[in-house]
Length: 313
Image 1 (tube, helix red, strand yellow):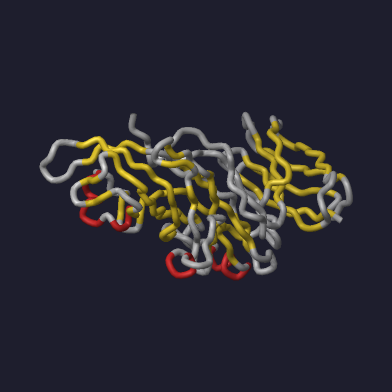
Image 2 (cartoon, rainbow, N blue to C red):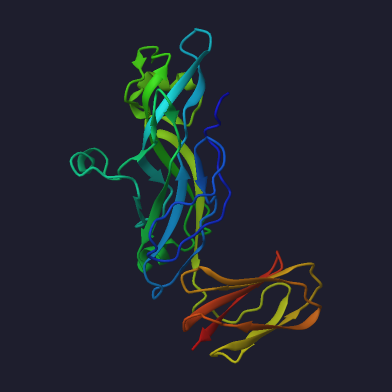
């Protein structure tokens, strides 16, 4: 049975600033997978500090591919893959760097591969099993702020391409054309790459359109403009120590309204689904164990959204 290589796991995860890179565990299937497909939004401002976002991945296991070399009939080839490395990552905002949690050999990796390797446990006799890893994207407050309204469409959304190089410890059969599958990296297979019949097999490894990253201006310092279906929106008291009341006017009936509160780094600290009425509505929000500081809250009906700030003392 053939393994689907380009699966993308749609599981939400995001990490606040300077979080340690810890891979997600919620993967299914045997193909290569990334999570999340949408990294948590970066809320950027000059005073928001350095921030990080984390992309998790799961390596592929022993994989059977249909390979066509020249005019020969298709050949079913099992690839035993043991080592994986990041070759390059495209689409990141300027100034944003990345690191990985991959194992690092100080003797060789500093020259050959500064990002280290993810290694599948197992061997060719018993087969290999997949492992998980993660990639951390890091930037300063200035770098993230400069990324606001950037990207291909100038909307702050950055599609990210990750190139993962894969080492075949062996092929079955042992060779494809003139390439022997013994500790051979995909990026070194050269003229054999078209035989896989997949344009994502490149001289930089396998190309994955892994995720998107959105960078928006932080709600800190926003003005109180009214958007779409919402009238006046405010919370009182503000600042507050334990409880505040968010009052808002709704112009038209909606089936569902989302209320969410974010910390200054964009992490969701509270969310609630509401069924409001037309006219004036209230939400009693309790800060509970939230540390003091500035928070941003949003009201969204799926078409309109309004953002305000609150201060917890």
